[in-house]
Image 1: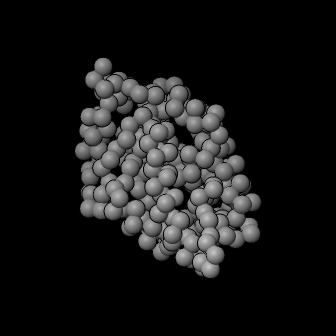
Image 2: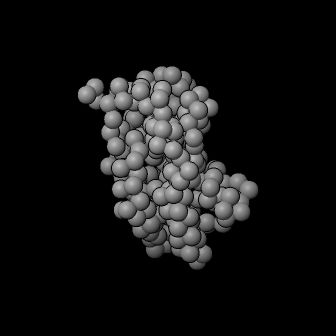
Image 3: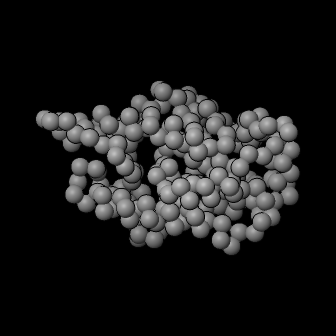
Length: 220
C-alpha cells in the first residue's frame, strides 16, 4: 500500500498509519519497530515474540534449538508448526487495532513463505518497508547465524552433496538462502531501504531513518 509523503506525515500525526517491516533476521526490523512504538507511540506486534510465547519458549535460542536444522528428522514437522503460528499472528495482527491508530508490524524472516492470501492482506493494509542488506553483510549475517542461531524456515533451499557434512552443507546453502530471500522481500515491499551496510546499520538515528523513508515515497 504505497502512500505519498504528505499522507505519511499526516497519518503519523493524526493516526491510521500501518507499517510492516520485512527482511532477514538480524537486519534491524525489531530495532526500528521498537523505535516507532517508543518514539511515535505506535501499537506494535512482533510476530516472533508471539510465536515464542505461544510455543512456550523463554528466548529465541530455545526456539531455534526446538526448530532444529533442515537435515534433522524433526525439522519439517517443527517448520510447519512454526509457519502455522506465523500465519495466525500475521493475518490477525490488526484485531483490536482501530482504523485511526498507528501500528507497526515486526514480521519474521520467513514471512515470504506464508500463503498468498496473507501476503495480499499485508500489501492491502500496510506500507511495507524492506530493510535490504549489502553483499558484504550477507557474509557477516552468515557468521552470526552460526554463532547465535535463530529459527530458520528453509523451504526447498537446503541440499546436501554426497560426502558433505551437515555443517558444510549449512555453510554452503545459507548464503544462497539469504540472497534468494532478499529478492522475495523486495518483490513484496512498497519501499526498499537499501541503507544497511557493514558500517552503517544502528548508527542511523530514528529521525534520519524517518526522513529516508519519506524521501522514498512519491510526492503525489
